[in-house]
Length: 594
Image 1: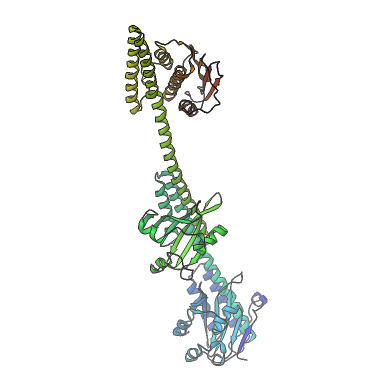
Image 2: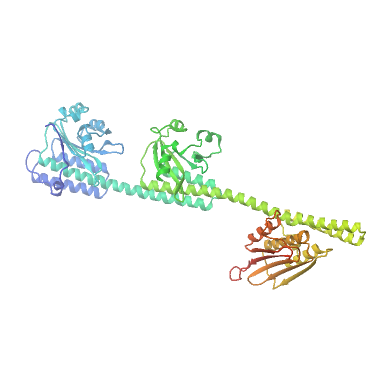
């Protein structure tokens, strides 16, 4: 029989030392000692981490020295399922190996290709007539190769690492000693290749770990020091490109309202955003179903690699192919464990990724998501600040100019009444008061523009400013005003003093405009825990639970909430109103100041 596919040789062959008898190609004890010496030399080369090519070459020399007239070679299997020369004896024909080098494995691709495909020892006793050699027999015979025995080199988990082969210059079948030799040498070669690849994997892991640490450190530094959130995203994307050795990458986020994927940022030489017309033209918002890789990421929450050339059509596929970008890796961007978008990384060629690379890529994608969230929060913060400042200005205008105009109107109306009754003295008093309020309002407006403290607090304590305000607003009226200071005044933040003064001004204005009161009592009380402002009138009262169209109560509430205090309003129609503001004071042991 010319071709034989044998079962994998039993482990007991490699468990016992090979005993060569003085027949055929062997030379008895001397050859056995030569084999043991050769094995020891090869194992020593493995131990000291000699280059794999030298070790495999030594394996071939050893076999050729034991099997005279034979030619040995080792072919390694690469990631594309091709056998490539990994070491050869000095007398093996180079052009033959060059022809075999890179050949795809298969059940009918020579003895080596078949052995790698079937994971079994393949014995071809006559190459000229073997169906396995129908495409290469002529070349083999031209180099004097008539028989080939090939054994797969398997790692401990059964994966094929390559093929060990012995070729002969005449048709022949192996003896039991040949089979044991092939088995023993194949095992030895497996050890050498596994050790070498383990060492390479360790070096690669160490290098990758260092790269991870550096990349993550740089990203964290950017998060800590960069004030522009978009710059954080750009930094992370550039780190992704550098760490994965990719061409470019971009960020797509799922729109919560439409469910479409929307391009946000990208790095393709320079940093790009969705607002650039040229970018927007080739990256339209698209459903998740547009790309198979997107669907896989949203389904599994794990990275997905897509072959652009083999993929279904999508809007920018032609652009990628024109630029020579043939692979697209999608990395999920997560918020609370839910996929909200992807980082799309583009490569010129399809490739495989180590688990450590995927872990780093996922970590960087999460940091990109953090940068985007910071950008969102920054925008929201700016909008909130604008709204808060708008409300503050509204309160200031209401509590200064609007209330000043109200006071002026009240005095002018009183002056008009005094004119009608020909009461010159009362007329003059009301005009003077109106003029004074107008001048104070003008100065207040100017100071508000400069964001300074209220005019009433310039050179005065809060208690003095409240009492002075009470006297001015009740001057020339029938309202009896009583101001009481209780406790020892404490230093308050200037914003608090301004707010308390504005609240008092608002309450007094309401008393004059709506309450029709004859008496108002104002109490400013300090103790070690809190400061209280209580204002009570005997007017007609109102129901505080009824909806009010005015801005005054809303402004008072906002001021008190901003200071962390409590505002309470007690009112009964026909029985007056009491308004209380309570602000907590921190003890000296806690902060020293409120």
